[in-house]
Image 1 (cartoon, rainbow, N blue to C red):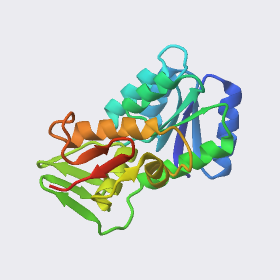
Image 2: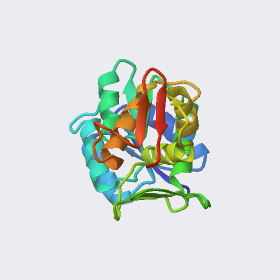
Image 3: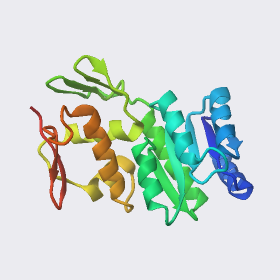
Image 4: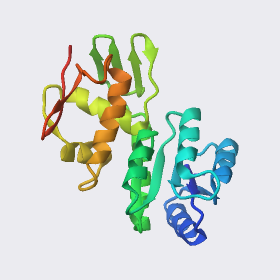
Length: 226
């Protein structure tokens, strides 16, 4: 049995094409046509990743994303959005989606995104442990502990934090972060901005006055150890 992917889309043609491409790469695929079916399928199957269309009948994709993330902070979620839905895309990222792809899309590109997100979700053998005062990041176990309490980070949030802490003092451009963390050679750089804001809310004592993750205006970001 391959890794399980739940594909949520009310267009049966899109769902069938995505299913065939994913199954060709060895994934086990479950389909859902609306928000309630998606939630029921998650409860029944506990997939390894969810591909989630935002425009769904009944419970919309944003609400599905919110409910899934409330149940499982580590569940990888890739959103499907229409080209003009920038505000919904940003809101989806703020709710905890790890990645997105805009319609119309190449099924092969979606497969590559699924593989990329799942690859990063699996703990790798690594001796990297980063300690910054009361913040401790264990790259091998993919855990983040702040003031003795383990934080619930999404796949992309963890990768972003670990990359920042591996490169302290370096000014990292958004384009570089997209490439190194998301594996994109091009894309919407607002994705980085949204994830950085969410990360600050979790690791900074005062997200409005960050001391660890600093903005270098007009360029990108820099991580500073205490």
